[in-house]
Length: 109
Image 1 (cartoon, rainbow, N blue to C red):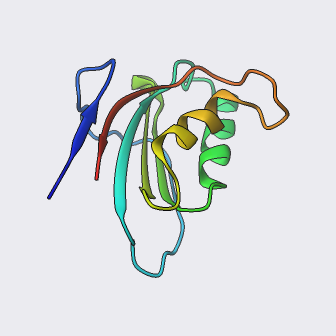
Image 2 (cartoon, rainbow, N blue to C red; image 1 turned 60 degrees about the horizontal axis):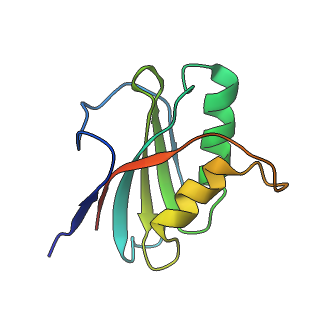
């Protein structure tokens, strides 16, 4: 059974040719996908930091950036990593300071 949650966006966007980061995963467990809107992704520095932060989370299998659209697609294990943690890691810089703005457009699991 598929569940979808949407907030603050149009739902889906066409697949881009942005960069992708994938981790080998022994099965996908409770695979889920989240589409995040992160303003400023057109900046290579912002894109690199956002991708690095998300890729470092346990339970994240893949991160695909669509810089021109300001979107990030994340495939993750919903039992290990809640959607809110995806947003939090983008919004904090790891040292308690403000990072980047991020909103959930859609989540499917």
